[in-house]
Amino acid sequence: MICLYNVSAECEIQLAFLPDNANDCTAMGKNAQMNIPLWADMPILLALMRAGSFDTAAHSLGIDRTTVARRLERVEKRLEIQLFDRASGRLKPTEEGRRILSAGERAEQELTDIQPDYGDKRFTHGKVRISLSEHILSAFSAQLFELITAHPDLFLEFTTSNRLVDLSRYEADIVIRISQHPQDAMHTVDLGPIPFGFYRRADSDGPILHFWASPGETTVPKHTLQAYPEASVIAAIDGVLATREMILSGNGVGVLPSFLGDQDERLKLISDKTIDSKYRLIVGCLPEQRNLHRIRTVMRYLSKRLVSSAEDAPETRA
Image 1 (cartoon, one colour):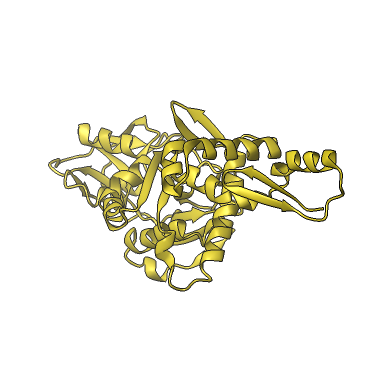
Image 2: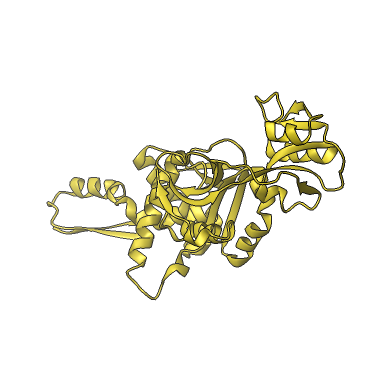
């Protein structure tokens, strides 16, 4: 016989050629929902990731909130993991949830790319989390604002920290860093070397008496001491923006990256030439996320705007 079970309002499953046993049919009906493949629920999971709430996700899908909540509960029960943290009415993917959602997003994009009329616009939306240092945000705030206005369908979330985030744990989607060595297993775009220079207040003249050193330094660099023999280390400072503020506070000199010092009219470069450095400006993401349209859009924009020669920047993978 053939048993037809209306498993839920949005899904009807036909179970064919079952034996003439009502108990067997009933058992299969009860278990049918657990046999629905994960990909069948992926559109709902992705909508929850992008919307951050049950109501907004349900509205975007054209179904009711109860259905969305039930489908999420079913998936989490089946996988025996929590995909979203619930806090103050908002949904935030867990670490394991981001791993699964990232795979679903890639599959969604590849399947939709079969239809050429969709193109990149279909998926150039959503949240992109960018981790960067405060001094990078300060120096490139104009370029980052241009990115925001150029792509209003993207929601950028900036996290300022000097801590090296772990992309493999989905702590961020993209990192912008000054680094000698890119993080392992990270797809990177190398935007070139970062020159440094000695800076002082623009309205300061006369002998230099104070030198703001980096942590671990106790002596004035030789070439600075030759030009300003009266200079001495007054203190060591951990932090680029903190060093800039101490330079601006009085008659002192400190080392700053040129992209920050040169744009500040309150400062002037006093070194004859910039300091050679092995540090480079790096933009990076996970290799498996590099071709997601929302990630690729931001990576390309940053590569072109943060450094003038970025269009020719080589791509590397650690």
